[in-house]
Amino acid sequence: MSTLSSRNEAATVALLPRVTCPHCWEAFAPEQVLWVSEHVDLLGDPLLGPEQQQRFLPSRFTVEGDAIDAKGMTCHSLACPRCHLGIPRAMVEAEPLFLSILGGPASGKSFFLTAMTWQLRRLLPQGFGIAFTDADPAANLALNDCEESLFLNPREDDPVPLGSLIRKTELQGELYDTVGYGQQVVSYPRPFLFALQPQAGHPVAGKDPAAAAGLSRILCLYDNAGEHFQPGQDRASSPVTRHLAHARGLLFLFDPTQDRRFRAACRNRDLGAVASRDNRLSRQETLLTEAAVRIRKHGGLAHNARYDRPTVVILSKFDEWSHLLGAEAEDPYRKAAGAMGVDVDEIEALSARLREILRQYSPETVAAAEAFATNVTYIAVSALGSRTDADRETGLLTIRPADIRPHWVTVPLLYILCRVLPGLVPRLKRKGTARTQG
Image (cartoon, rainbow, N blue to C red):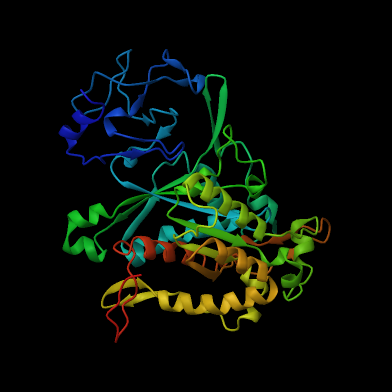
């Protein structure tokens, strides 16, 4: 009896023909999935170590279709047959959508990611009729803590150092899992996992519930420390950036305050010196170039092949240099004909203006992005949307959490979703044009 077939019969759950592990990216049939034992005597997994529950391929099931371990306990959790790391149940039912976000050290990537997911939890259900929930609360624990620190902070009216609000992305630790294959120890990145599921308010759900169910996805969002893109960091024992080859889209965060030419044009010209504590300046295009090398290598592409999936260059800390662009744009999504859509034309028109600004101050970044990818879009965001002030005693940048007003942080992901899954996130319909999807 297969591991999930009885559950499929009991609960009429439609399983994918092939499941992809979000940790090691192994593809396997659903009947090969392992279960995680529950009994306390069944400790010790050959790949994960003596403190982890054993993984096993079951032969006994409950009436409800759950596996029964060797000690007679009912089991509820699944694991990959290759790396033995846990995978959420939803991943055997809904297709995965892999996306990668990268940016240099101190680029504000963690702040952006936190603000983006916080706002998407409200915007997608209310505006687009799409449930946006944690597919694996344990995997998203660190991100949920960051969301609470920024947006549910009990000290919301007190100035708080930025470093105390969100910790730096780590090279190892809680965002990585270690697996032992004999003498070889491998560290895998732990993605943030979200379920995207059309609800009653979605335009497809109201017409064809079966088609709407087919639009559901498990968003696997990978966030690497910038140091992982340094030469020598990608190796067999630490394949922490190999998700790039599987990603359907790429988000690259460019921090203008780390560029000397761009920094000079910022309102607060000493921002970079104060915020980074070490007057950080960096050549950020080298990170994108290294990412291109790894995508070509692990994706089996020619050395001069261009990436054909959506690539968004996100210009962060827009509140410091918005005067270069002029008036701030309104959110590029609105209702038309009773359905919410993303205004791709507005995003791409603004992208052209941002490209010219970036080309003026950092032409090598534009050159690196467009030599790497055929479809590059430039989007400006501000995760905080408010001025930061230096503490008089420590010199550290602080902000009152109550003053945080993110700007356009949801747009990069909405734009990619609109391009790769137009049935899930539709393009705004405009009068006088028949084109409705990207």
